[in-house]
Image (cartoon, rainbow over all chains, first blue to last red; front, top):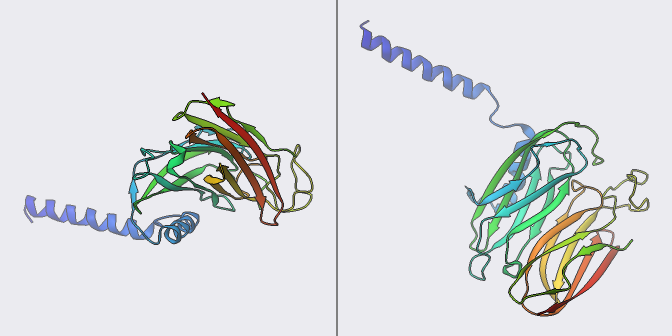
Length: 153
Length: 106
């Protein structure tokens, strides 16, 4: 085996290890798959595009019971180009669906704020539907300093 | 249990104003599971919040028990002229609360 062949073999084995690793590690957690199902039903399996959806959260929240959030979608909010709805999910909550907001161009600005319960540190996911039928997804992780009982069942 | 709203009394036509709302409600579905400062007889979480201006719907939220107790919701509205806001909070059980607000324009 010359040096070149050895190099090829080494590369191949790396690819093999990577493939094995990929099939061995779960692609997503069960709770995130649950959210994916929710979103697929909502969007009718439409492709989700990245960008335009920003979730504002504190980096660390001391309380699991009340975490303030803002979801902002980049949109001119005119009658020909606006956000129809925003849906927020927290995969690690017993109740992953947090809220759905239905907007109209009358709002002038695609931004909503509220407070949610978060059982533990996790990723919060928001999807937004535009009036032309396209969907965008945004994601943000948050640390909960004192996880535990949030009051939800 | 009067819902609280925070909206300007007057605004300019075309101005985008923030509408802040809050209602005292446990958002829990079990009797006896109310947190301090909420109404103990709330048995089902709020399901809908609807905002109308001059009888036309401008904003709606579908709530779940994953929202915090005493749900606060804020959103924006581009003022088309003077008019009347109507806000409605409703449980799935049918119990509902409303608030009205008059907006004048300069």
